[in-house]
Image (cartoon, rainbow, N blue to C red; front, side):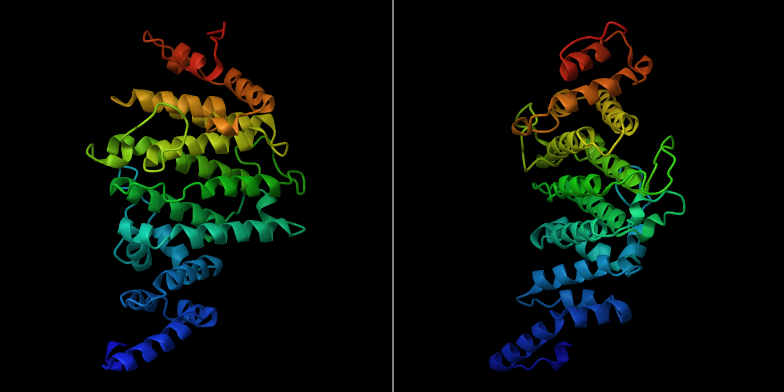
Length: 354
């Protein structure tokens, strides 16, 4: 391409304008993705004025195109290296180009096209008479799901940003919108589903995955370089600290938990299942040395359902308490009083049965 660009300033301007007009065409990008998807990486090496727009269009088109290379690359990057990070093979050239360099990802807002496309997908599903995500989880091709692929994209992005000391939450709060729309779309009973199964529908599995991902961001804290400034805690509360990725994830998990527990679409069994994931996360974090203040932040977020101005309802508190009655407390009874401390922090009282 470089050999074709004229050497005069005027000629270069005309040529770049023409290239920009062509490459920012959705039809052109769709064609590239179907025939030569990795040519998009070559294009990124040129400093076009509309580079961010091009990246936005490419990522959005990749996610909306079933079985595009993005789906394969996310699937092939799923194996963790043991410290919560993904092993991203050299063959995953798009993921490596847009996510491995977290500063590039942050500068180019790569969360936006993925987040917006997941929301569009959920909006489209909402208009369907028979939404397939309300079907049983059996035969669910998870790595062909635009919603799950979008969640896993965020997972790679946030973890890389956490390890690379990016002082920004990378717009993980898109997950609150995902949760809202997933819950809104749920119609349990539209097909025959087994309500006693771990994940009665595909939406149930997606919600579970979303909480597991957020939880892994929080649990990553002891694997992050100790000198990272993006894990320096400023305040022991559940209020926003946008430069702190772990604190942001703690606030986020509380907000999403509130949306699940306050929903009329979900039964108490599944609400308890999700709440218990958060309870177990608390005790897992408790065992990590040196993060006591983060443990307290997590308890506050669980109690409030996120930050204070988004205060929870009696519906939330009742569902949370019901979940705790079914929580296996025995593994957490110890001489250091951690269980009673948890109860006081989250519920404001100790339970006589403990």
